[in-house]
Amino acid sequence: MEQYCIRHTELPGASRLFGDLLYQFDRVERFYPHAPYDPDSLARAAKQIVYPAERRAALVDALRQSNPNNPSVEKLALPDTVAVVTGQQVGLFGGPLYTVFKALAAIKLARTLSDRGICAVPVFWFATEDHDLLEINQAWAYDAAHHPVQFTTASVNPPNGPVGTIPLRGIPLDQLRQTLAAMPFAAETLALVESAYKDGETFGSAFRQLVEQLLQPYGMIYLDPLDPAIRAIAAPFLSRALSMSKDLVPAVQDRTRELEAAGYHGQVHLESNASLFFTLEGGKRTVLKRNGDKFKDYSLEALQAKPELLSPNAILRPVMQDFLLPTVAYLGGPAELAYFAQSEPLYAALLGRMPVVAHRASFTLFDRRAGKLTKRYELGLKDIAVPDVELREKMARHLVPEGVTSQFGTSLAAVNAELDKLAASIHGFDPGLEKAFEKSRSKVNYQIGKMERKTAREALRRDTRAGADAQYLHDLVYPHRHLQERMYSILPFLATHGMDLISRIYECVEPACPDHQILTVD
Image (cartoon, rainbow, N blue to C red; front, top):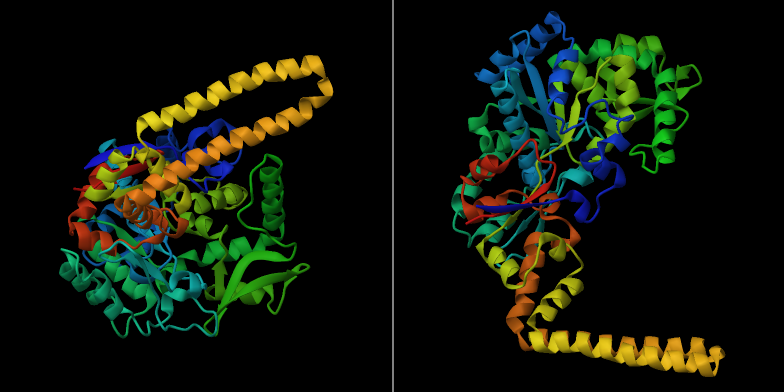
């Protein structure tokens, strides 16, 4: 596969915090204890892990039940083994494409560390406790013409409970079959999906079955925080965090103000009555609020007596994760990495350590046609990741004969040279006319530019194929103004390129590289 890299800061949507974490770490080192791409960071983070033998034994026992016959679980049982962790919401049809990229990056980093003498295993955390059904109840694929197609189920979640346990209803398998039908590997892809997404499954169980099949050769460990055995291990942590929440919330609020004062953003806003928790009761996930020194509707003693009622919020959740696991590194997306900047005071108070946090692997996949088009039109990813009108105009300008294009430039320079002479004469005659003259100059320049744009658009109209090419690139690479990896499922890519696409992407994952990669798949 052909490949090249581009910095994330050259792509739309990159926050300043994200860009500095990747490329200017000295600016954010007060918010993160480890530089994500310093080769020594992982070794330092591994040495800081204090993970009691009894907790390891309990975790391994729980994971043996949920991950039977997984050699990585037996490896985790060894006293010095660390975990490289990633995770994702349990979205329909495997969620966005980057779900697979995250997983492959964790697997590759764990293997890299093991090769360096730091025994490591990859762990995938299923975000089954989340309660936003709307966010996971959709998936996107492209059809044979590479037009985006959306899928949703008829599932409902009236009590606002954890999404992982919601039964699937009205799974759009027929729509998926129609969408993928003309693709060369559609049958294999559909068989994979149909074995996971069937009646009786939940969002959590179907997601897991699909991801497990995709990653079957790689020894990934899967962890569901709703597993009662896992929740039992987390209970002491949750109880302690709850008792400290009155002090922990102000610490997070102070950190948020620090971030904002430094020109960054806080991913989560905490009210003064926040507790860092939800309650899970009666199938419903509800925000737990403080009421002075107590909690609304609950006493501290009642909650500590039944820790199964507790569910951490977005900035406490990673700390619980790294209490449960001997985490050396977490690989996440830009929003997740921003959570960690706010969570760092919680790590300091509750764990006394924090893992390396780094960006997941990030890819855009071109097919052969897209690769040829980008060469023909001399386009990079940042040229395509723009509104479709801009892309068409860029391609149109490329179609204008070189002599015409250069003549516009020559003519504009010549006109402005003559106007400069005229401006000097007018200034000598009457300086008061300068403002009117410059306004006239702007109109002249505007009209020449307008004619250049009209010429480019005319070239595009004359070449109907170019218009189709522009639509093709936009639909594949930047559908509905989203980066491909954030919108499409892995499914249409498997149906187009075959089941070995996963291993081919894996070979291109480079843990030491912070950049976005563009891969042209043959």
